[in-house]
Image (cartoon, rainbow, N blue to C red; front, side, top):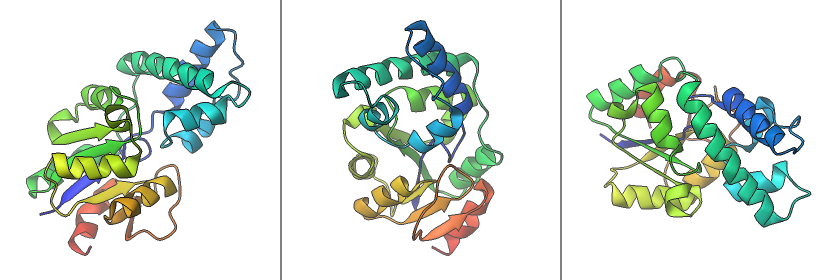
Amino acid sequence: MRAVIFDVDGTLWDSTEHVAASWRQALDARGIPSAHVTAGRLKSEFGKLLPEIGRSLFPDMEKEEALLLTEYLCDAEIEMLRTYHPAPYDGVPELLSALRAGGHQVSIVSNCQKGYIEMMLSVTGLGPLVDAHLCAGDTGLGKAETIRIAAERFGLISPVYVGDTSGDETAARAAGIPFIHASYGFGKAAHPDAVIHAPLELPEVLKNL
């Protein structure tokens, strides 16, 4: 059986409403305009590295200042999500259980900050269903490089990446592995190897990939 690597936001859950609320609250406390920080806006930002998000949301700030602010906002979101957190997408717990039962390795690779995956696994109860995880906050590198490191570090067999954005597709291609587009998520993909419209479609797709 092969290894399945998942993205987080837009693939396993949607935290954008909660994150946007926590970011606006933190920005308001600092007297920084926050009206543009909405769930819809964050859906177009999630999946990018933190410096890119900072430059996009706060273009009038110096690059380092925007990064530090974004890191501060990420700390604020972790605290909110520990208490007010979304559920996984419908079918995700059943999917991960089925993959594990079928002998697949289940892992997560994301461009998120350190601690975000751990928090998500804890508050959703998905932790026991995931074998390993790695993020940009751990490696200091982009998603393609982090995928390659995860594959080597965790001994992943014939890995495939499941994500929802064109950035996920680009990273999978750069890492040299197949990409399955989770079309129910935040973005689009140009030429995925396969498409799923709901999480529980994945096991059947894997059989034909």
